[in-house]
Length: 261
Length: 261
DNA sequence: CGAATATTTGAGGCCTATCAAAGTGAGTGG
DNA sequence: CCACTCACTTTGATAGGCCTCAAATATTCG
Image 1: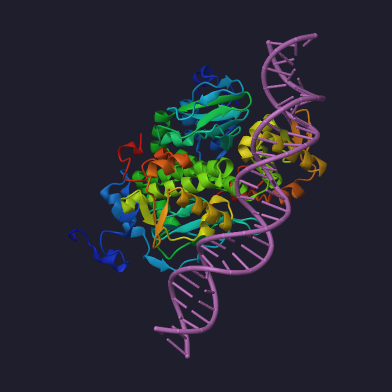
Image 2: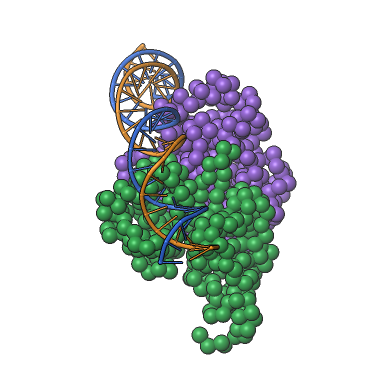
């Protein structure tokens, strides 16, 4: 942690310690060399805190920066004409909420904070330059896109073919694995979002999510204690949700070796 | 079309005319230089015809080649323990069915032909070499991943928040646009799959898909004539499905300029 | 402490699933 | 060219999961 390089410019950007990106999957990736990490840390904008329920990107609004989530949860959302909302993806610490901004100027979704979040921005043009110059960064971003792809596929499977109970169980299992990279404990984590937001992730009603949560509680599969969720029996919860963590390709610390080819 | 380069080796691979990839989005991409196209055509394996309902990749089976679909329709599929199937993606001519094989050795899905298909394989290791050498190819593949991402997001929106009628309308609209790159007519195309397969794409039952098709027919929104589907009123069908083609980012000939930044 | 937000509970209804069977069409072999 | 078969489509009846509407309770936050 000695300030070997010029840390001052980084500190100016609010990146006092190593880098706010240190918590990020992109950063953790085995693909990044030292130089690549420095280049990334250099390109990043100051960390910013955003309150809950505020749009980072309004639906269909142009955006010229990539958003890294450092703390808190955000979500991509789409709205149908009749006002129904769905979250095709939850963005939790370590995620990039709008990776596609790298290639497309107009997203087909919005991004909104679900809890208070702290984020860091990466300007698209600078990122393009990094991608062109550093193959490791290009690979890491490509990997992120593919993992998101797999996650979306599972999401679709849940929405299309699983009951409310199974869907909720699957979501909770997925989150426990994805969060584990930071929390270090797969059987419990902070759960900062409302049941209505869960409903928008699962394609259900808030009312029904509530009933489903109670069902899982009654079965002894989940518990709550001041905003943290606890899984007394992870194995059984996974069974209920039909959850197989392999599609996350080592987004957690749990399967460190199986990440890439 | 004169054989300026050595066409013989290509011909040996069954790529007689320009290249079987000519029909492919990857090929069409404005990112590919002449040299990159040649390199791609060179790397591709001989075109192969596969009958309907056969696995290109069995669920969870290792695969070391990328599959381009040249003709016919295929699908990625996932199965839940109770046997329910869902297609998170349909792979139609021009698509790569298993892009993630580039980075991950074990897919979390299977790939299966829905109709008779002709495909071409691209070995993963050769593709990696191409990506490392040709930035245009890397960019084009990244684009494909991001478009697939957007498509999966819309798929999730349909599965989570749209009625059967809306889902079917949306799917048909999406297919009409994606196929248009080849067919050139957005109001009609060959429809080679069964209602049960449609059900697996929409998260419905074959029975209900049948009823929903009839509903759309009765409304004058779709017609069938010997295996081709016809949309008498595309605008109205899009309205029903809540379909906005922008997320496909110019996968069709219809929005040629808006493809990239 | 009060207001706004989130959770909880109840009753009733609709959309889609399930189960079952009949009808249709394409391909095969005699 | 006609049975015959297999797969797909179509139709009907019933049931169930989740939604809708509504209101009460609990919690958060200023």
